[in-house]
Image (tube, rainbow, N blue to C red; front, top):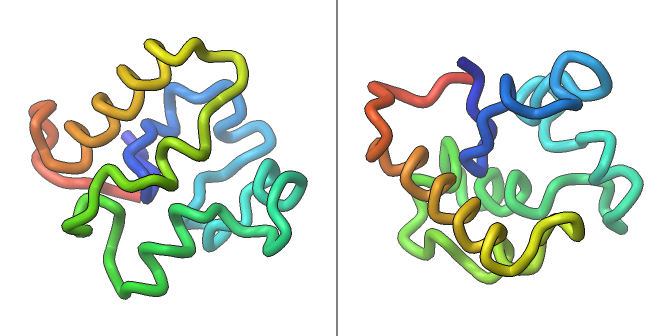
Length: 102
């Protein structure tokens, strides 16, 4: 299982291995970040890298405002909140995962 810097399970994403090899392999310069951000890098990945953290799970501010700001427009607010909690749980090891891998 591949887990992104922000706790998404890459293997569950419809873009993984098709148009996205995972954020660690492209150093946060994912296809969507290139299209939707001025810097061309995922803000969550960039933040963790700037703080020299291995992933967002090592940050004391998890979940931060960036998680709220990066809402998938196809999700309802309730679905978005549940997704954030799932990602936080994944990053904090509350889902039975022994470690995060990239």
